[in-house]
Image 1 (cartoon, rainbow, N blue to C red):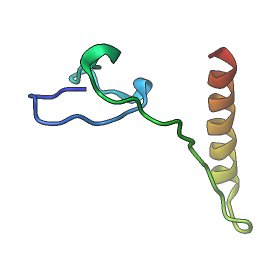
Image 2: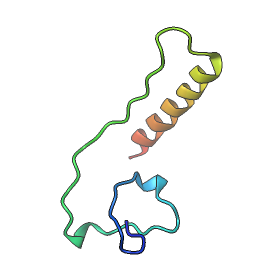
Image 3: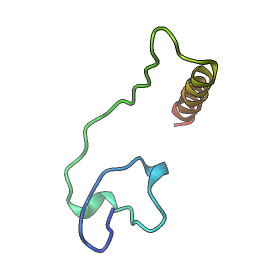
Length: 68
């Protein structure tokens, strides 16, 4: 991604702001390694809202993985 030619960073494609440009694969940058996103809740004391939010995020990521 490029913003005023100041920096290059990595983002999930779905999170790139509209004012940044996604660079194509053939610009000569090295490949990135695989990565994982982990979501952890406390073993005890997570409220109902936190548990539901975690379920929502996990379900959304699972649907994306199945679609890919």
